[in-house]
Length: 212
Image (cartoon, rainbow, N blue to C red; front, top):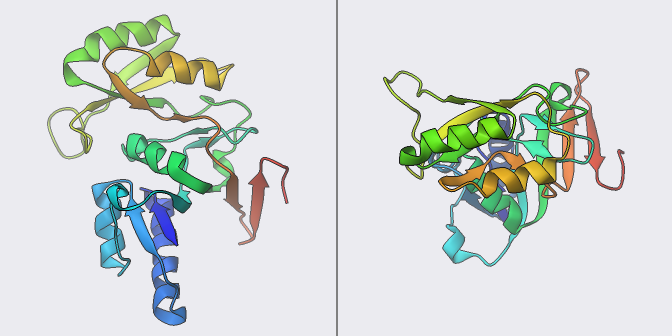
């Protein structure tokens, strides 16, 4: 199998579990990473890596999320890898989101801002356009550095808080259409399943055909 490997603390547990099954059960798979950090972690776990140039499809993608709505639309991007994560998710036959119950919301934007990946020279005009869409954009500053966070693509990120997002698909298209925007953290119609970890250690599975 070819597995899409997401970025972030939640997916790190999945990588460790996959590595354990490779060692103990002889599980055969290759991974395609969504960020430099995901690639480094996967290699450290002993998972063989391939690039997207080497595959025509991905069997399964695993990733976390900042918010999940009842239609399994997502907000992602606290790890600044949402653009690559979206490319991998779109190539996957099955895209499984790993989350805890705190990530479930009735409407996207209820708790998490929407990260928007922007060409540095276009930050100001994009800020103005996002404000016209009802958002409050804030430039994300890099940890332990003086200046903006820089993505793997060399872009900057605006974290945009919206009072409400009534139509995720409409907002997806509106932000993506702004000149200077590479992509953003609203994922519409990509997740096939959401595995929700419970406090008692059980897992609740949400799917488009209903919970089970």
